[in-house]
Image (tube, rainbow over all chains, first blue to last red):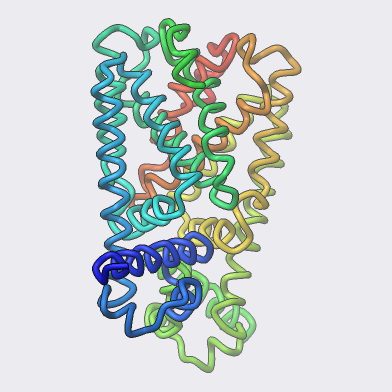
Length: 196
Length: 196
């Protein structure tokens, strides 16, 4: 195997091991020794790639943000209606979080280190629910900004409540959207497919 | 001042100082030295009352649980309808959390140390939404257990999202209930007063 490829593999295995440890015990309690043990890598190899735990954390957050940006762009480009985009994007993200420990650790780190409000989700909810309101899709009398905050709180709360068992995230999120949407929208029948 | 009374005051000032530090920086980062500085208490006086930071944390959680139990009993005894009880109890709790740093720290500790599911809230939501369903108060087709989980996720998410600014908690919670309830209930007009 060429040296560069092997280095890439080592770097990736460090990220996976760090994400696994952070996913299980949190960032503060994640010890370098536990990460090294998990990926069977020496300290020397670790410091060839990263200056320390902080730099690993930054790499995980960066990967999480890239993934989220890529996913949102894809859902926006489908040019569905705004609420279908919101439901589809959040459920799609939930399914990826279930499968991908690097993404789960990135989310935890993004929330703890940079603040929940700055990770792009809040403005995304505001934008999509606002567009739905402009099209007259919200229940008459529902304030768009308040509805966006409610949807965001529901997703954040669901994420927190299944934290101990991330493989239930997508199912719980779909369930919550199914209960929430019929009361929030003027006509929710169009969304039946998106929330599945 | 009698000695016993002075000892009680010292104990209370340690709890308030610890709660303040935990509220600002979290439990892990809360240092004993910062707590002692804040309440202007010596190490000797501290160890007269508590064996260490852990015992302070336990005292705060215990106080939080007692308060929550007392509040729920009061709201249950009013014998209002179940959803009005749920809305009133959560908003009342939010207002107390805004005012009382000991309670805020107790909630944070209860969630982090004992797990979000075991602090009594989840079963309370399940019970009250279930009773509302039995009375035919939920929107036709809404699954009571799923509706309870949605309401709980909304409250937990709202709490998390205003964590940096706890004085917005009650207002944000009332706003979320106002958006959520009309779509969740068969007839939400009765609840207008409770969600205020």
